[in-house]
Length: 254
Picture 1 (cartoon, one colour):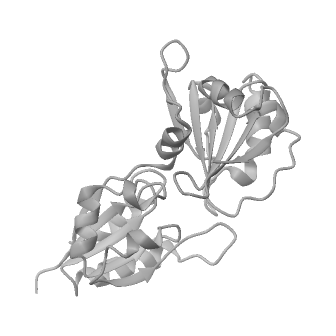
Picture 2 (spheres, one colour):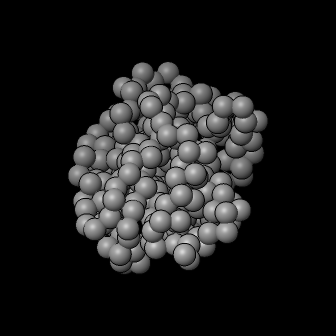
């Protein structure tokens, strides 16, 4: 019996209507879907004929081990023609896609990645702020300071200092320490920061602040995914929101 194909599909930053046409068509044809914890229910509803399996990972909560996910994908491809691994954002950016692709390749199973809109791009579009801007920002870095258990520390700081605009993933709980590291390394304390929670969704919220203000800010714990955007391109949007920088952190709904 021929093996099926596994598609690593990007679900985008949150809003279901930001899914790509290709991703939508694959979901409609899929036999089984293994999805992340943060995929919108309306996105999952597109897989009307498929078996739906949750294999999400959330910081501080029960998570599915990566080796188990890889095994489930291999097993599913031996029973189904079209297997979808649905990942938040873009599967090839902080989505552990390579581990799954390697496991599938080792098992002789065909796999294909389908891009999605990553959270930083969704957040920037929602804010109406380009991550690049003539005369202000010509370089962008997508980073995460977080590392898995047993992994070496992330050398994210040099890349952050070398970029005009910075997008930090999985950083909300460490925003104060990230700000401290950036300021200590020479980034101006007045550099604009926007923390965007639930980017592109109806309940999106934004916290406008600066690196310096974040050092002492007592922000409420975010319950949903947050992307931390840093750079001078965000200064005007902060002022338009009623927060003339630099000021203490201020949280506003979208």
